[in-house]
Length: 199
Image (cartoon, rainbow, N blue to C red; front, side):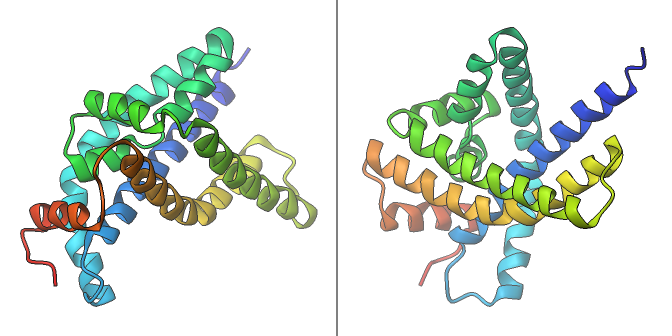
C-alpha cells in the first residue's frame, strides 16, 4: 500500500495551518501600525517584524500540529479541543513576545471562557472554505486527490485573510476579558514593537 497520499495529505495540512498562523501574525502586525500610515508603508513596516517572528511561529505551529494530530489520532475529541485552545498562539507571539511553548499556554488561558465562540468562528470559516470547494466541484473535474487538494488550498488562501482579521479581534476581546487591556495598552505595545511614537 502506497504511503504517498498520506504523506501528501499531512504535508498539505501542515502547510495550510502554517499559512494560517503566519497570516494571523501578519494581520496582527498591520493592526498595530498607526492608522494614519499609508498602505504601502504599513506593509513595509510589517515586513521586518514578520521575518523576526517567522521562526517562532513555525516552531509553535509544529508543536500545535503534533499536539492536534496526536490528540486526533488517539481520541479525536482531545485533538479538536487542543486545536481550539491554541488558536491564538500566533497573536501572543506577535504582540506579547512569548516563546512558542509559552504562547501555546497563553493561548489556552485566553481561550478559556471563549471556547465555544472560538470554535464557532472557526467552524464558520471552515464551512465557507467547504462551500468554495463544493461550488468549484460543479464547474471543475475534482476527481483526483491532487485536484481536490489544490481546490482546498485555493479556498484556504481566499478565506484565511478574513479569518485572520476576525481572530485578531477575538484575541483582543479575550485579552480584555482576562486583564486590563484596552486601546492604550495596544498603542504602548505597538510603540515597543515598531519603536515609533503613535499619533
